[in-house]
Length: 102
View 1 (tube, rainbow, N blue to C red):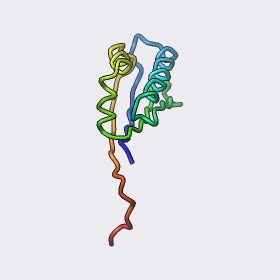
View 2 (spheres, rainbow, N blue to C red):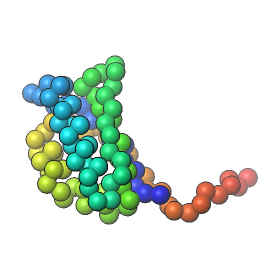
View 3 (cartoon, rainbow, N blue to C red):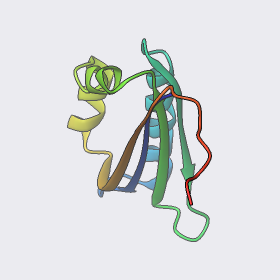
């Protein structure tokens, strides 16, 4: 089923929210072009516009690890657009769902 990532980030100063949003959107577009990445989107928090939630889906943990070696990922991290608050990762198996045991 794949490797899923949900990340909470905040815009770093001195960047404006508008500048960071453009960079985040471009980063997500670049991620969606990566081999092994089938989903990469960012949602902006209505209550706090400096907060974004990124949702990503990779074919495997290895594809996610490869993501960090790519030039656009390294450039985004080094630019310091955002601060990562937390990230949740889940790798789901390809097995069919089973009925819960009682």
